[in-house]
Image (tube, rainbow, N blue to C red; front, side):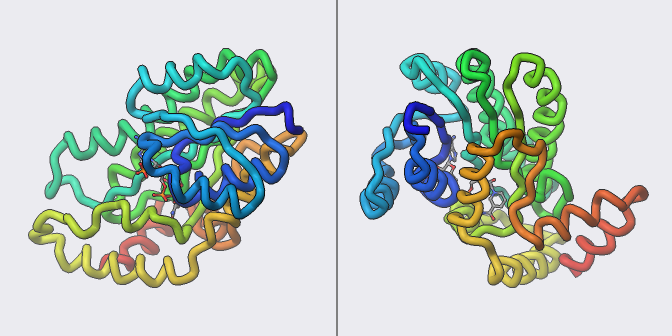
Length: 271
Ligand SMILES: NC(=O)c1ccc[n+]([C@@H]2O[C@H](COP(=O)([O-])OP(=O)(O)OC[C@H]3O[C@@H](n4cnc5c(N)ncnc54)[C@H](OP(=O)(O)O)[C@@H]3O)[C@@H](O)[C@H]2O)c1
């Protein structure tokens, strides 16, 4: 396995950091990318603790020039893990369209930029694309309008791309975690929420419910193990949920043809 290269986005913390270390431990050559390489200290310390090394590269998923520059230097690529992403809590009336666009830039267009640049190399290696989406890419959740829209978009994009990429030997999968105890919630900017006006009581109820949900969160290392298993799998499934609670939650949607079951569930989060 040591001659195989995987590029992972967003490795400064959380799932990306844990996956970089776990993949290196499994023998992969890891191109660990982050938008600000001054934040590589935690990754490098974790890699050192595990007795492995990773190659840290600069890559901002929202900047196609940075993406192309990183990919151009590689020569070989056997797998891409689209992990970088950012949470966002808000609702349409209390935020600008620019706020929503920024969420799409990171979580949707970021995935497109990197995948597009990686595909020529992945076609050569008959490699794979693993994209971390979310149960929020299956079930729309209160105050996650922009985030869920972006993750739904990624899911639709990848589900459509998968059969096309398969004709050239490239496999495409989406990985859907539920709550994961990473930097995700603190990075989502809950401390800088605008005045929520008439939605304040609903937001309060939502945040209370979210705190409880994150009390039982998976660890980033759990999700990393799923990703490393998929890197090695002979034929990775298209969709992989990373926990039983994620399966139960996303499963509600599959059978909910008129949308009433999801509405019953999510309305209870905000009342
Ligand atoms: N945690 C959860 O509950 C959860 C649940 C479902 C899905 N997910 C998904 O899992 C993935 C990883 O999130 P996480 O939980 O590990 O959260 P995290 O600890 O906040 O990690 C997110 C990573 O993405 C990076 N990132 C953000 N914007 C970027 C950009 N423009 N270019 C490159 N990297 C960028 C961050 O870098 P900086 O340090 O520079 O900000 C960080 O390394 C995300 O796609 C997220 O949507 C998370």
